[in-house]
Image (tube, rainbow over the protein chains, first blue to last red):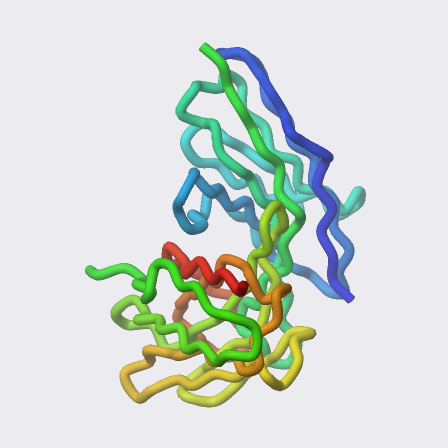
Length: 116
Length: 115
């Protein structure tokens, strides 16, 4: 079956530090890949996505590149801010024969805390 | 454009009781998915409804059931509640078109506590 593995957390950084959160996946076929963010007390928000190999998703300074050869989709940001403190989830969505439109399989989440 | 809304926000039940959670999908969306997020974990797919029919189910027992209405809003029903059902229940809506993956928009969730 499909699965997503994220790096163990929590991650604690100082403001303006470089961020990497690792994500690898197992899936049949050609899944779409996503990063979602969850701020305290809120639901999930889509941060970025990539739908095919070598695509780069980007948003709000965050980037991730779909690497099929390493089955990875690592999240990066060059300079984090205190407001980036949240839980980050890597996810994939695979379709087969037109069924299960976009069922998401999530990783366990990585807690990011950024200090001033 | 109104986003995805869920009710109630919080709910406390006791073991053995039944609960109904509600979700209103975003305008123009015909697909609703439900997820269970236990504390400290990623969301787990429960099931999905597309045009009022169940369209895929995760590894959850039959006491988890659902409905989708003609206006594409949805309910999640859980019978015979167990302590492990305590979680945040998330609803997500999207536009479903055969074979295409569309972005899912999540509601704020319902926090269910089973005592």
